[in-house]
Length: 191
Image (cartoon, rainbow, N blue to C red; front, side, top):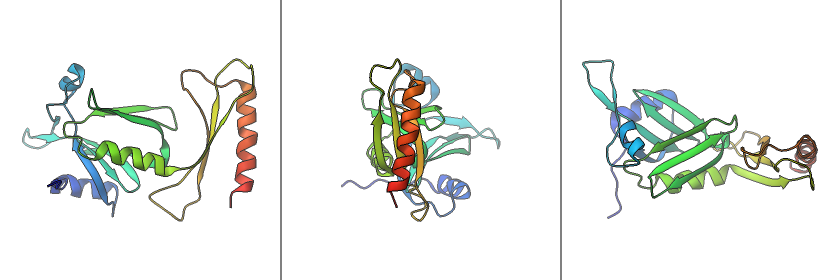
């Protein structure tokens, strides 16, 4: 009843060259740029292929440890612990994310399936600890001190970061200093 076909064989093979042994949890075709501009999630994207004028479909794929976006036969891969914000807008069909370097990514999904739910679960599962830090009446925004699990490698140590709570409102120097001090405290407290 709820069965969904597997990621097509060619895309699975291509993804496995980028992420050997990756286990696919969910996937979707990505809509064309024209459909994205109209806000429509109806037309799966096909990108020009190097061979015989074929057009390759584009996909967003959630694996145990990564989000992979494949366009034109090439994959852009983000580890879940490197995605610090993200979400799904069911009205537009758009999945968006911001990585730890502040780069924003996104795609309109033609066939979302379970991908939005798996995306949320994986991003949430990567957060080991998160704490907001603010310095009273200081100008500027708050910061977040966080430890992230590396879901693709359960034996790896946590990744620690200080990030702005809202990228549009950078934290003040005093807030950043307090957040860095708190990060040091938390690193000593966690085994």
